[in-house]
Length: 388
Image (cartoon, rainbow, N blue to C red; front, side, top):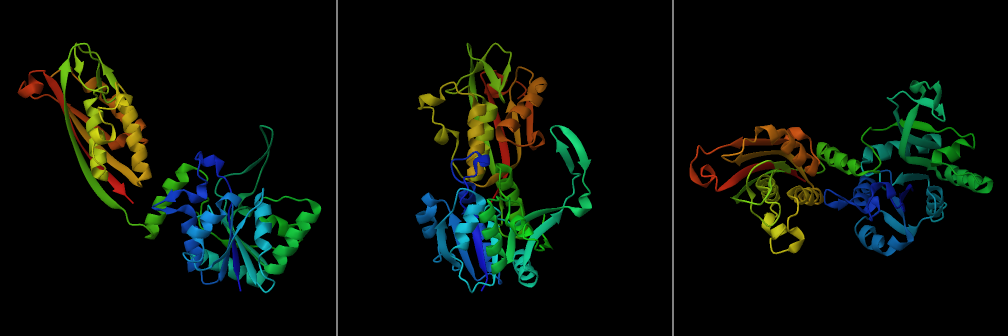
C-alpha cells in the first residue's frame, strides 16, 4: 500500500493574493484540484493524506475529500514549517504502508507517469526524488563576491514528489527531530542518515507555482498536454464622441494638443473605449456602459486607461488571453500619426501585453460626415482573445 502526503498548508505570500496559492483558480479549477487529479490517475498511489491549514480543514474536506477525490483518506492540519507538516502527515500513515511520497500541493503540473516512476524507484532503492539537469552556470558566493563556479554536470534541481520506503522516511524525520535539524526538503533528512537517494529524471514543466506568471505558464502547459482546450473569440467595438471646447483631447491615453476635446463622462478617450468594447465583446461580457456606467460618479473624468486595466483583470479572471487588437481612429484633425506609437504603448501596458499585439491606425473621412465636418471623432476596433 503506497501513500502520498500532499502539502497544502502554505500561505503563498509571494503570490501577492489574499488566497493561498493552492486554492487559486487555474483554468476553472483550484490549483490543488489539478495536483490531486494527477495522484488520482497515478496507479502506484493507493491513498492520499492532504495536509492543509487548520482554518481550511472543513472547506478542504468538502471540496477535496473522497467524495470528489477517491484516494483522499485524511485531511489534517499542518505545522509551522514544511517539515512539521510532513511530520503531521506521517503520524496518520499506517505501519503496513510500503512507500510514502511527499508532494507540494502547489506543484500542480506533475504527471501521473512521473509519480509512478519515483514511487517505483523508492520501492527498489529506499529513497528517490525527481530531478532535472541544471542548465544555468551556478556560482558559490560570499556576500557579493563569487568564491567558486560549480560543475553543473554534477548538479540537479530537485522537485517533488519525493518518495521513500516507510521506515526510511520515519527514521529520517525522527533523527531530524531529535537533533533539531530543519531541512529544506525530505531527501536532505535522509541524506543525513547516510542513505542513498536515487535521482529519477523529471520534467522542466513540473514547476512549483510561486508567482502569478506561473499560473499563466500553467495554462500553456495544460493546453499543450491537452488538459484544457481553449477557444478563439473575436469581438468588435465602435464609438463616437462629440468635439467640444474646454475639453482635453485624449486618445489612447495620450494628451494631444488641439483646440477642442471629446465630450464624455470619463476622459472620453474614444480609442480606448472601442478597445474595451471589443475585448468585452469577445468575452461575451457586455460593453463599457454596462461595466462602467456613466451614471456612476466614480467614473467621472476617470482615465480610460484605468478602465482598460480593469478590463485586463476581468480577462485574467475569466482565463482569457489577448492575442491581438486592431483599432482605427477616424478624425479630420489633428494629425495623429506622431502619437500612435505612444497610444500603442499605453494600451499594451494597461493590458499587460506586448506592444506588437496592439495595432492603431488613423484616417480622415475626406471631409465627409460628422467627422469630416469636425463635429466629432469616431473609432472602431476588433480584438481576438484565447479563452480557456
